[in-house]
Image (cartoon, rainbow, N blue to C red):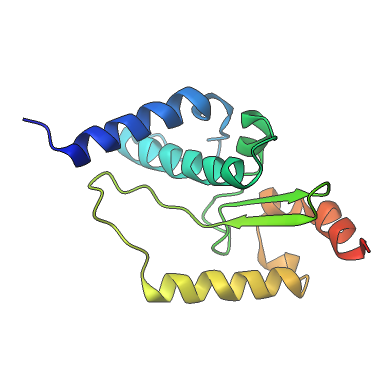
Length: 143
């Protein structure tokens, strides 16, 4: 018999796959099936997080904001919304058990990454992140 948690996780996976998976860049993920699924779902969660804070933005644009990778410096997605004058910065993980939690050290790393974004230390981040430098510069220069 399935638990409510299993049903909720299944529903979340279905939603993520239907709305974001086909738009997610997986070119920097190995071929091992379990790793690919975990990485895909984590990236879909990052895209969904961008969507939650920028509802008017299409799912493919939210997916394009994903910059997850081994050298992402703790930032899995970033989106600059010039109309709303907001920057959405995301760190995400998928936990198939539904019991996971972010560790204190991971929160500290993410906060440090946010500070480094504000200090424009873009060289610490990967190329997928750096494509948003012009958007971040424009946001910083907006009055």
